[in-house]
Length: 403
Image 1 (cartoon, rainbow, N blue to C red):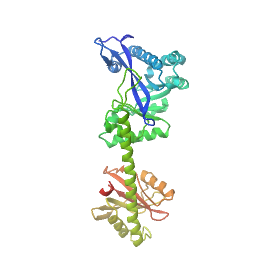
Image 2 (image 1 turned 135 degrees about the vertical axis):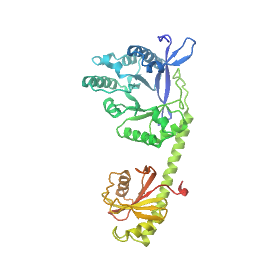
Image 3 (image 1 turned 45 degrees about the vertical axis):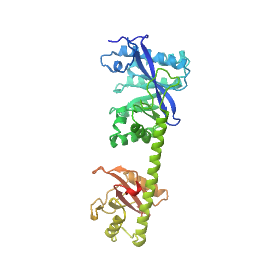
Image 4 (image 1 turned 120 degrees about the vertical axis):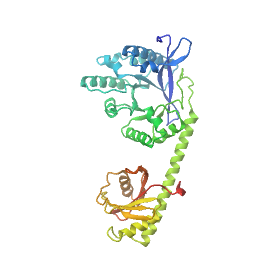
């Protein structure tokens, strides 16, 4: 069994890239040790071993932290520094937070506490005791009042995450590595990454994607939106922050590829919408829409013949109430399929439609989404037939000429 001491424990530093500058924003401190043969090895197994006591883990971590802060000062760094701290290690400082070692060492080495990011790593943290909860809040507030930022690690791993998020009020959340890896093969995870990023942005929290190991993962993360990126694809942990090696070109090339795809998608969608507008517009010239009660079947049939890959057409009023049955279209055959009287004001495509109509535009194409039953990707095209009657057409794919 290895013995860990001041002599063989060393800090390593993994660069974290900022999308805004394509430069190193910060470094995460990681524990390493030198074995008897002089090989540098990770302390990860030691910290995750259930047999490692609370006291021993804290002792070793403090050696790593102090050495890291000392080296940060010696190398005269100006980037941010992520240091991992378990909430359980803070229990003894509820009444005297000014004695927190990280803050004391920062002062000792002349480091601006505003450059330190406290990364909370206790992934199974659930606080049920109000007194202890208040103690943690007070300690984290002390860190923040001292200038430190707070990062929450492994976001998305446990069911209690929203409670943890509200409790800790972090500045940064690090997306769980498993989600990033699984996103390569599952649209569910890709959509979830985007939903987390959208939520975080709405409440003023920055996103950090960690564990990025492949070009595809990086492109997925960039397209999901997020400010910070970390992983072996970008940079390996290093013994020094001086002249740190990171894959500058890998990130810039991936970002360029994502932006090109997004640009092409915007152009493609706009062309497709214009194509649909022309089809509907010409049809309305020859067959003006009068009301949903007058010869609506013939009107729908004509539309289905003009709109490629359409699966259903229906009309709604401006409050989202469906005022016709679905006109279901399947390879030239059609039938009415119910749903009159349903309200779709809660659906994303209807909200997009209302934003479009309120802005003065007559038509639009929704963001793609998955059908509840078939799980097929769907676009919904919408068109204002009158000020109070809106046409909706669900389309399963774009014609090849628009891809």
